[in-house]
Length: 99
Image (cartoon, rainbow, N blue to C red; front, side):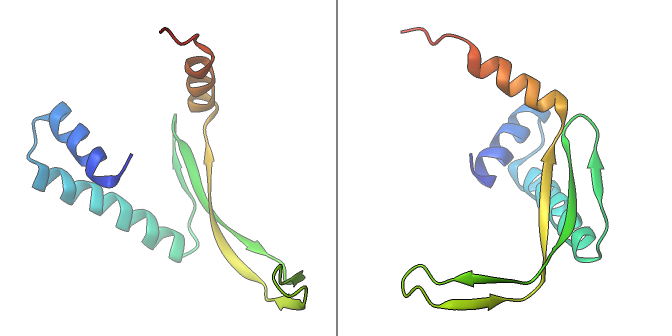
């Protein structure tokens, strides 16, 4: 599913125009990105949480040459899905497919 698909789905469900819906989706995405850039955690109950985690520096290996390279410590954004969403997805995927 792409951002355009999300905009279409929300616009259809809410009756907003696609332009208005795209502005809302873009606003949500930029708000999440800006909060993560500031090191803030975001929790959307019933959906999941975003946070930033520090990864330690380490020695890695270039798979093409086998050469060892040093990877500096860095920060990575993470998303952890809520228990409710996990359950819904798992239950839906277990349903037998009908031909």
